[in-house]
Image 1 (cartoon, one colour):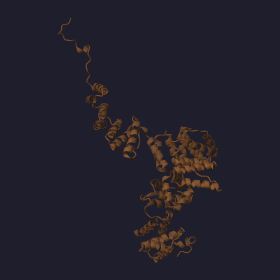
Image 2: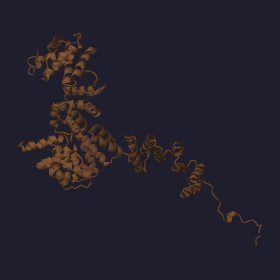
Image 3: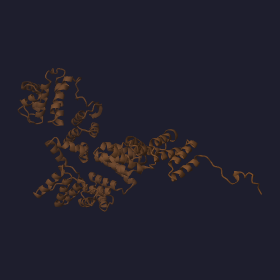
Amino acid sequence: MKEKNQPAESAGSNVLPISMDAGFFFQRAVSSLDRYHYDKALKYFRKAVEYEPENPVNHCNMAGILSEMGDYEASNAALSVVLKEIDPSMTECYFYMANNYANMDLFEAAEEALVKYLEEDPNGQFLGEAEEMMDLLQYELDRPTKLKSIKSREGFVEHDQARELLEEGKFIQAVKLLEGVAEKHPDFLAAHNNLALGYYYLGRFAKSKDTIYGVLEQEPGNLHALCNLAIFYQYEGQEELLQELTGRLRKVVPFHQEHVFKLATTMGILGEHEAAYSHFKRLLQDEEVNYDPCLYHYAAVAAYHLGRYTEAKRLWHQVKKLDPDSVIPMFYLSRIEGIAAGELALPISYNYHLPYEEQFRLWEKSKEWLPSDMGENPMIRSSFFWALRHGDYNTKLQVIQAFGRIADKEVEEALQAFLLEPEEDQYLKDMALFVLRSLGVKKLLPMISDGITIMVDPSKVPSELPEWKSEWQSVVDLALSNMRKNYDLQQRHDLETLWVDFLTRLYPETPVIRHVEGWAAALEYLTAKMHDRSVTYEDVAKQYGVSVSTVRRCVGRVNEVCGVKDKMESLFPSVQ
């Protein structure tokens, strides 16, 4: 029997020692959290950090409880320590920081942190939450988020951006973006299909077809690729292959809305109007898309080709309701009225724009109508890009002039590429250079001329003169400035060409330019006559503020040197 004052046996025999390590404090912190004792939890998390300062999880736990307690600045400070000093690969810290900034109403900083997370996180653990926050930030900042890519969805963001560019008619930019996506992600078939479309819109048919074949090698039943291939068979006139593929497509009944639309438009282009009409009618029953005037137009075109003019008329009236400012439904409704009056029912395009010829007719009638529509309508733009590669001489000339009115980066790149086409007419290339000059392009550009690649400066008036005097340029500048509103691009180009020809023929015995206004007036007068426009000496003399005799004298000199009267006698036999 033990005595009362006998010491107990060593604790090691029946009591476990307390291990004061990071795990111990972590468990205490969690236990405190379960009881909503945040102060204690924070204290224990800080202890865990003290015991294991190199463990990023401890810092994140501490940042989490600080955020729960509303101390967002301290929370972000802890997260910054992780990213800067311990483990930069813990990209989820950026997401946590974005939440903290958003809670502080620091939306710019929140956006910066969120973009950093999406661009660098390889796993996308919080992708869904991040996309919700992105919507919130777009609302708060009243602008799109400045996001270039999502690491965990690498290629998807770029693909979405490229699709938007295609829809806007910016085909060159879209193709560049899609080429990068396709190279990095050879199994991303949607990107390859859209790349094929981009090539097609630009008239690069061989590249487009190769891209389609590449998709079908990976997935023989890919509907988008099969539809694109059918269009190619039609373009190339491969009737046997086209009939076989069209027969397969007739049997397809897609489920997804996007596939229904793709098949409907393809069947319409192929002349399978009954199938196209059926698919478009299916889409019009879908409340998610039946507000789109284009969709009603497509269905109306199908009905028109089937001879169902009453139905086509009804559908175009719906287009008019949905798009009241557009001239397109009125144009096609007038076609229906013409048929009722005995006119022939001519074929029309499924594209939601006026026929190509009608666009240029309206352009010549009203200088203000077509430019804005061309800039906004991707199908019109695509027809222009196609025509620049495959149209006849006159069509290409019209397209180059139209590009002068669209005047954007896409046009600039297309015209620069046109300069490198070895078979193109030199006058057309000169016109392209004139447009590039009007766009403000000043860098040296390569151009193939007579089979030789030369460098040209579009900012300078092209001439073979050894010098180009400032007073000569002043004449051109004044004339072009006065003619900008009332003369088209070709006419202004021809004025410049006439002036260069005049100076070149006389050089070095060129006249002293004492009256810039007189020479500019003379050039406008002669240019107007060359294009069969009604103008008198009095008209231009008044416009340029010079006497009629000055204009007459300058006109006579240019005509004497260049033989304008002899060349254009059929147009103006009584040049005075």
